[in-house]
Length: 203
Ligand SMILES: [Zn+2]
Image 1: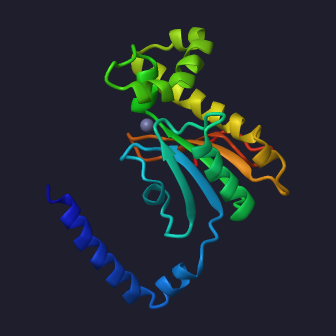
Image 2 (image 1 turned 30 degrees about the vertical axis):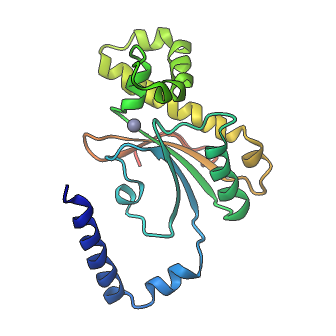
């Protein structure tokens, strides 16, 4: 019950330290934002975009939801993309999933009667799992199956984003990258490079 109080105290400390380090930091922050990256990640508390990439306030325009999905026709996601690309003119869109994702796991399990919104939300993930039934069935363990579906999900969202009018019609079009974060070692793996000719690699 004390965490919100601790957070407020930590915030005051952070603001003080930040000004001590850079007296003009908040003046610059208040002038406006010009992030170079739109980050689409999972809501999972263990995958905080700024922390795992050492980014600062103003660096990332962020959208997070369960299982880092970009469903077609979703105004919440699409409005974030539209604003990021057409107004902020970000050069990069990063979809960052993670291994051990609860939203992805849910797509491999029977729907929970207590979670109708989640069930509706992850329906496209269930369809994706179905489309890759053979490959996922050949995985040696439940964990391997879950993690492969997490990768396939990132690839699917990357493709959806690249196919949007917002990305395609933009000049120049932002580069769309697909990443996946490992909770085991804190490292990000590139599953779809947004750079021309880029190959998947450890980042
Ligand atoms: Zn997740």
